[in-house]
Amino acid sequence: MVQDKGNKIAKYILIGLGALFIIVMLVIPLVTVLSYSLREGWKVFYDAISDPYAIDALKLTLLATVVTLIVNTFFGIFASWGLTKFKFKGKQIITTLIDIPFSISPVIAGLVFILVFGRIGWASPFLSAHHLKIVFAVPGIILATIFVTFPFVSRELIPLMQSQGNEEEEAAALMGASWLRIYRKITLPHIKWGLLYGVILCTARAMGEFGAVSVVSGHLRGKTNTLPLHVEILFNEFHLTAAFAVSSILVVMAIIILVLRNIVEVRVKKEE
Amino acid sequence: MKKVSISAKLKKVLIVGLSAVLMVGAFAGCGSNDKKTADKEPSETKNKVLEPVEITNVSYDPTRELYENYNKIFTEYWKNETGQDVTITQSHGGSGKQARSVLEGNEADVVTLALEQDVNELVTGGLIKDGWIKEFPKDSAPYTSTIVFLVRKDNPKGIKDWDDIVKDGVEIITPDPKTSGGARWNFLAAWGFALDKFSGDEAKAQDFLKSLYGNVTVLDSGARGSTTTFVENGQGDVLLAWENEAFLSIKEHPEDFEIVTPSISILAQPSVAIVDEVADERGTQEVAKGYLDYLYSDDAQRLEADNYYRPSNEDILKEYGDTFDLDLRLVNIEDDFGGWAKATDKFFADGAIFDQIYKQ
Image (tube, rainbow over all chains, first blue to last red; front, side, top):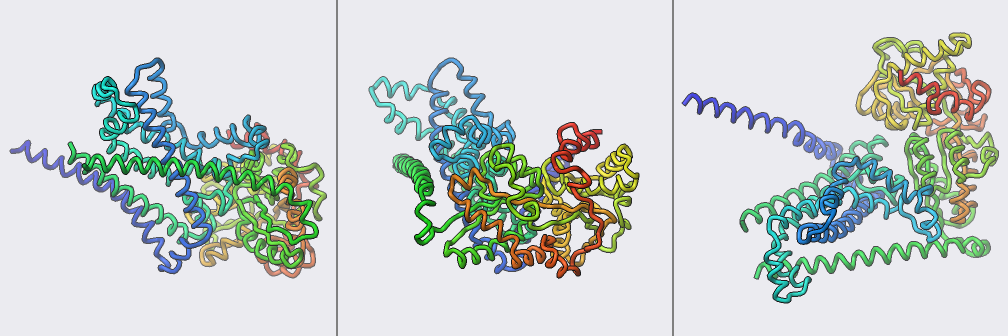
């Protein structure tokens, strides 16, 4: 009995602390963003989010996110397939390399692109000869976003594929199925939820990316400004309400993504 | 059944994805074609209706509001003058940081930076031709400013002059002289005061600056970052600020702040220049020159004064005698520091006086 009581107290303290932490660190700031953005009424809010620069920034963020998603999904599927279904030397090294963007600071990622593709970077003679522009232009922003969100999909898929093993695929191959067919009929159905989960995480991260993009952006309004960068500009120009209004777009998109994530999680549990 | 439909959906996604990638590729291709045709343009534009033109102005931190307004009157002026539509793209940040980004390939047709030295970096990088400083009147500085103190309402720490901000317990906000032009002017203004106070004793001046930077609690990378730190985030007792930046803060929050003018400050001359490499390649020399020339027109000079920059035109400056303290004693970079090249080597280069002060 006594021990039971002690356990209960510990339980409530732990839950209480957890809840308090979440409220202070997450809920209050988010509520502040939303309430601050509406502080001066809907009119100011609407003006801020319908400002041409804000819309350009939103478009660029969406473009960068979509391209990133496509590239990283392809890459993630192929990389995890290659790494789990085949045996070769240096596999461990590649698996580690994929994780680099998780451990490296985004600022460094941005600087790397500038050193490679910038005016005094080593690829510069080639790029200027072909009138290509990468950093301080949209491609640079997309590249930086891809770099930062590189591991999300493959990180979800690799453990999943590892646990499933190769038996089914090998059996299918023995029966003469083409690789595309094997992939469609066996591999994909197994990984689809993991894939979706990775894609969702990747989207969330890509939309919010600030550090690496800030370095390669050049901050040209209406051209190379993403939504997070636009928030910073508004904040620096004393347009606090507008800054929070634009932030709230990001917050709402993030919440939508979280809901999607939960739906996926529930589906996964059901299937199991 | 379900599984089939899902993999069919995924297939669709893949197809859409592939076509999107192809589209982006095609788009990029179009982009480079555009450039090529743009190169041919200038030769045939003379007698025909001028094609709309776009220029990029990479500027420093506090000029955001100034150029937002200036771009409007310039667009109008240029349309009346030449019939050509011009769109101006702005970029703002710490002056040194901005110069760096242009050097790395951020394509600016004109730069309007906080100090001569940052433009000189672009000369060294081969982007701007030597002698740019004589290309526009008044050493290519259409407006000037100076450094003042912004303090909280009723000046609770009793700050009157540079002496007062080095006292114990005064928290100073100023940006980093390594990346911010305004911060360099701050540093030199303080140095000018200290030299005057210690009758030219540089060792004592260095100690004075050391205790000043010992009181700095937040060192942002640009002037605007420092202003938001002080004004919006409520940090510190005194902000060493561009005069224009201080006025702007008062305009935004008239109840909360006061400006204190020290006994000595510095004549800060922000520099403007055409980035020749970019303007030549894009064929925008003419509009870029027009853009910077018009900064000296009476209309623009008044607009600059309205945005709290001191107009370089003496007569117009006098019209604004109520706004600016015209009797303030100002040291200047040429006479008191031997020019920017010297001042940079002495104070801001790696291992120079600022580093010595800050590292100890």
